[in-house]
Image 1 (tube, rainbow, N blue to C red):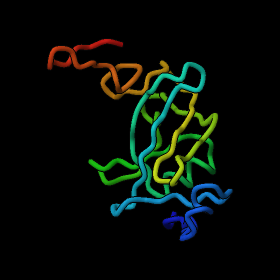
Image 2: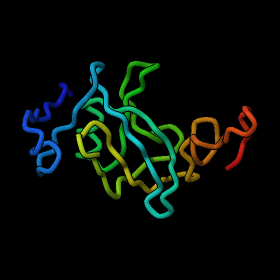
Image 3: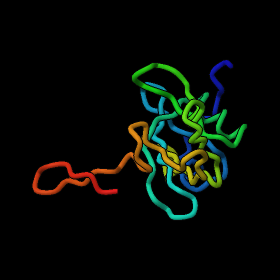
Length: 132
């Protein structure tokens, strides 16, 4: 798939208040994507999307991300079964971040190290402590 083209809006009012999806990707061609559980609101993960990942997510209804470490597109849950099905997509006011409300397949987890959420540790007295 060639890199999809999203429109660019120079008009701040149109960008911030209009109805045109015009995501603002950073210099590396990426946009931050926060996934939350559609029912509970729990934050599951923060990942990155390029234009292709966002376009595939919109087209298929299943979340795709871009792995910065691997330099490759990936469909969440393709190997783990933790498919993230889109229930709603929101963009922030200046369209440089997306919020994905999802239902999770498989065991319901999102973290590649086995936790439900990638945010399974808290900072307590300067140390990280596991708290699901």
